[in-house]
Image 1 (cartoon, helix red, strand yellow):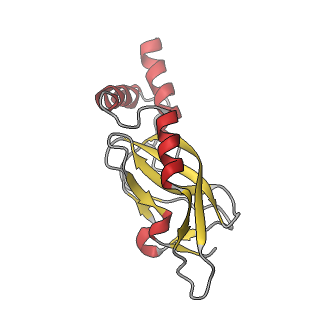
Image 2 (image 1 turned 135 degrees about the horizontal axis):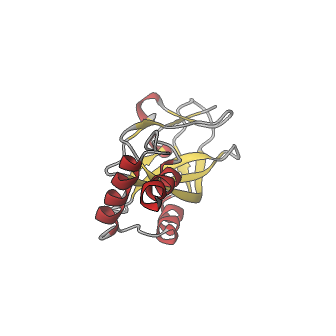
Length: 153
């Protein structure tokens, strides 16, 4: 019984986030696919731990200025607060909470390179906590960044 219930429960935890695999709960097939993906990708991953991903995110998003698309507006800064590993299902629309800074139209879709990505959360202009970036689990590279274009809320 645990072989049928366990993997979907674990997979659902990692699928809970932006771009996460949908409809995982109660699906042993998706649970086992998660296990296969996790074993396959964890062997050589550059950002295999939350600590390494958090350190990388804080280096990349250390309060650096962000281009603001509104003429005459003050520069924005992005600072990483935390990261979350998400089992992804391909490209997804970047979620934007109310009153948060929105990505520009050409930067509204994040495209993970593999089944796992670290979603980076932070704040812009003292606004609410939001997704400000994404790091590739396998290579450790920055693969989406709100600084590639941000509009005022």
